[in-house]
Length: 219
Image (cartoon, rainbow, N blue to C red; front, side, top):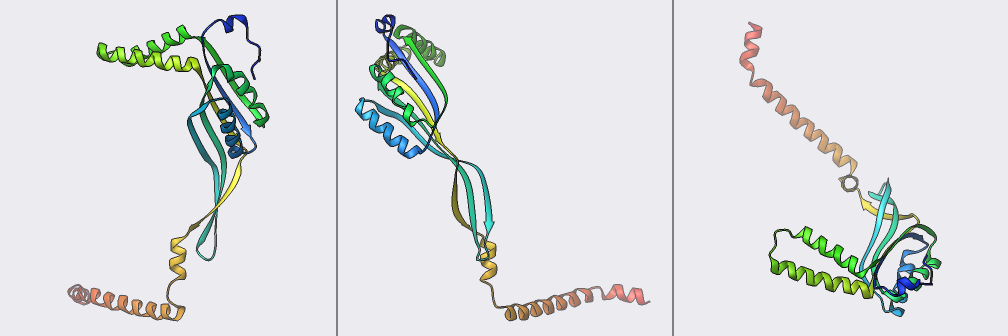
């Protein structure tokens, strides 16, 4: 990924280094464990970590007992923001090569400390145009501390994913379960006759309310 040899100009300057990688791995959990071990050996640490199982497609199959089999196509993805000592950046990045199943993209940046500090100060000024001088001074001090930290520890953002997998889970069809848990057939038939008789009575009573209308028709 990077050459182990550094130019004389690069060695003589204070550089803030950042890198970003995206690649495919065979197993995200094993890859994460290996990365954490390598970070411990090189005195680095994880600043941010996010694990996501993205569902790209799904299908369902209903069963007679009221259960539903849910099939999901998932893509395990891990996003890491790690900090590695500047002198270990090249070795750490090149140690990732055996973990890569397929490589997607890479970006690398090495800027002078003064230029990076200027960029951070400009961003601070743009974000707080109406703040007081005291707040601006505090922001500038924090900016200097942050950039100095970046000067010591390079920021590497890594995103890797695994080939799609099938995840099977179960759900419930509550309407089907309620239907299966109902009374026996003969009891339901008897109830249906009772309900029908009740509706018939209500219909006769409703028609009787129009007795005057019927007399007019007969006349």
